[in-house]
Image 1 (tube, rainbow, N blue to C red):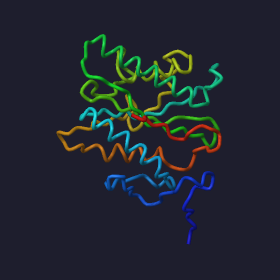
Image 2: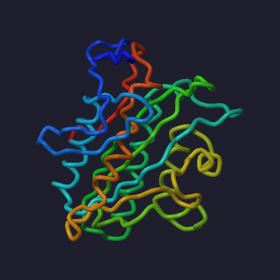
Image 3: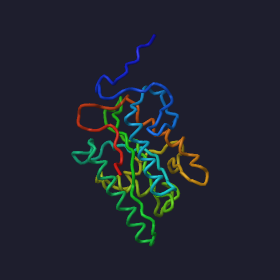
Image 4: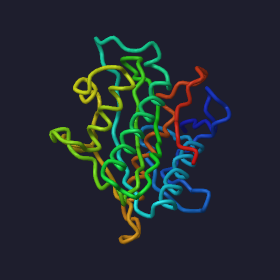
Amino acid sequence: MIHKPKRLKANRNHPLLYEPIFITPDDTRMDVMTDKGPLLPDYLEDGYQVFKQAIQDHKRVLVLRFDLQLPLGLTLPGDAETNKVIRRFLSSFQSKIDSHLKRNNVKHKCPVRHIIAREIGTDSQRPHFHVMLLLNGNAFHNMGSREYEGENNFWRIAEAWASALRISPTEAAKRVQCTKKKIGCTFYRLEPSNEYAQFSEAFYRMSYFCKAHTKVYGQRHRGLLTSKK
């Protein structure tokens, strides 16, 4: 029989989940991705609360899913491998969202909520970030494409990453990695009209962020960053 530790060896405060079902604090059963190894239930709960808060505030929610990578061969800020770069990214993206709403006289408020996993590549030993951004689905409807030359959420993300890394938007766009689709990125629309049919899939994809493997502990960099309100 394979031994399955009940707690994370690197941080005994973290229990481990091996089963493909997570029971939320409100007793909802959610499918989760455990084929890459055990998950951290504390992280799953934090992510679940971000989803629930966004739905409570907006009813309709747009979830954007993408990865952010650091470029090679370019001069980057000294803190590029810390979580400070993600905080700059989030601040820049929120500013771009606020400017768009004001410029177009959109009345909906749109606080940008986030679920972000910081992981270390096994080969590169450099950090990369798995990202979900949750927006007001009444104000924004999709991700948009990198092929589009106008303003859209893809280019807001690329420009915010460029601002955080102090590189050009063109270079930054190459480091915005999409999932499932080559053009644009995965997005989910959580809608009351269809009883939030895509919520379970979005949460399942988010559960990948919560795997114990590839997280680094003891370096004062939290492995999962989530909105607190």
